[in-house]
Image (cartoon, rainbow, N blue to C red; front, side, top):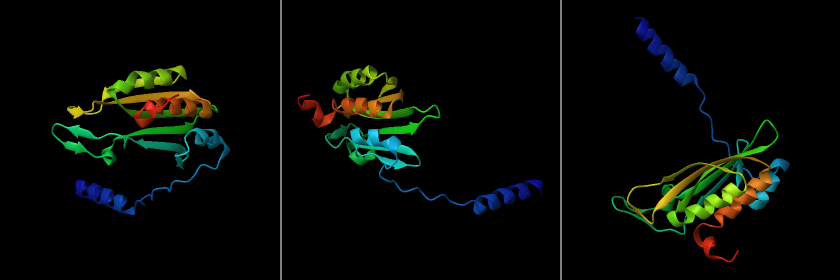
Length: 163
C-alpha cells in the first residue's frame, strides 16, 4: 500500500508541474551584449545568454554508413557568452572544423587566452574529416568575440579570403 501511495504522489506531482514555455530569442539591447553583437551580429540573447550558431553549409559531408549528413543534423559551431558574477564575460562553445582547419583555429583562440578543453573527431567514417574544438574563456566580451570571429575566419569559405 505504501508503494501505491508513493507512485500516486509522484504521478500527481508530475501532473501538477507547470511546463515551461521556451523563452523567445531577442536581439541584444543591453549594453553588456553590444560589444559582442558588434563582432558576431548573428547572435541572439536567450535566457541571459548570448548565443551564436554558425552552420557549416559550405560542406557536403558523406558518411560511409549514414550517407550524406545534412547541415541541420548538427554540422554547426555553437558559441555561448554569459556574464560572470565577477563582472567579466564568460564564453564556452564548440567549433565544427575540417581537419586541416584545426591548427589555425586553435592558434587564433589561444592567442586570445581562450582555453582549449578538447579536440575530438565528430564522426567515424565521414569525408571530409570533421573535428570538434571545445573551448572556454573569460574576459572582456568584445575581445573574446573578436578572437572567436578571427577563428571563424579560418573556417569554411572565409578561409580562402585574403586577411
